[in-house]
View 1 (tube, rainbow, N blue to C red):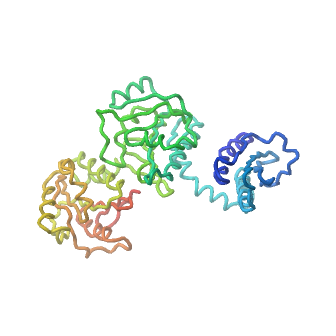
View 2: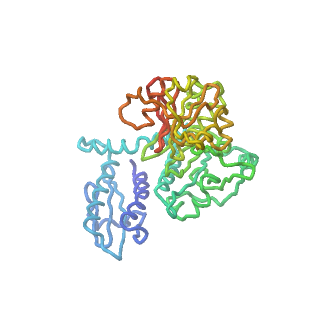
View 3: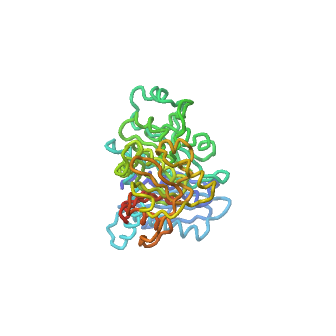
Length: 437
């Protein structure tokens, strides 16, 4: 790492150190100390304690170093704060110098474990664009991650960016023809304080509107659904903004901070990289639809069912669906979840309806998520809902009733199990084929 790179890194760390020391009441100075000759620079990086002022020293290879000065006049820096900052300076010094010393190998492994997927995601989204774009991509995603930890009046904060790498001629005019409104803004640099006030994420919520960004991480306007566009009811797919993304160039993508406090990066129609619980997962709707299509005669029904399943997962409801031409008795259906008169009447509303018609009726999703199993035949017709089945064939270790039901029923078709905490599992012939999320 050269001198300029080290300086840039340290400046990026400065706001985090400021927060650690108490926030905006703590002043810091971004530039190098003009005359460090009277300071005794620690050999391996460290802290120079001057009471209400501290100097953080980060050393590079050789004798090159960078110093940040922090000042908290209202309260002296405590010994524990000094000890922590000492470890921070020494740790960063170890990282920027490299790992020639074998005893620091665990530092190397820790950095890789915590950063490998973040680096991979930024490189993947950057594609074959210029090298410097990595920084812009990573910066935008980190800001999105930060918002997932915020709450406003008890509710998760949501928003979105559509990052356009190289706008094509007429791109903004084309947005209007796709059923969106575009409001241009003065170029605003997207920094760590971009979401510092509620209006930035309350006004642009990621559901009806998104910020439009261009390199280098600069907001140039707001894209909003027009009266001719409707919000997609398939939550978690971000279908409503796909037309905008399709009109962009290589290296463009959309970032959504979701109501589940997750980050979804939409890089192609139906292809999402999702950051949840501190880890990245991949959701490929075309792949899921292809698997479902092996058991449905209509590709359109398979695509629709795929979106419904992902939408149920996004709303954090559970459900079980089996795609099978076997009789209800063969599948092991014992009875309905609700065999009262009203229960039977409501379940009949779905029977013998194609999936598309059942979904348009407005009750299909509710039925799938109301316990029991929904049975659909290969022609895409609903044959039963709220079905309770015999769990005699279940042998899978761990899991609950849904897992046992999924394994048992999967002897007679493809079972889609949606967990209340998000993951989607696919079972066939008693084995789990794949898990999404």
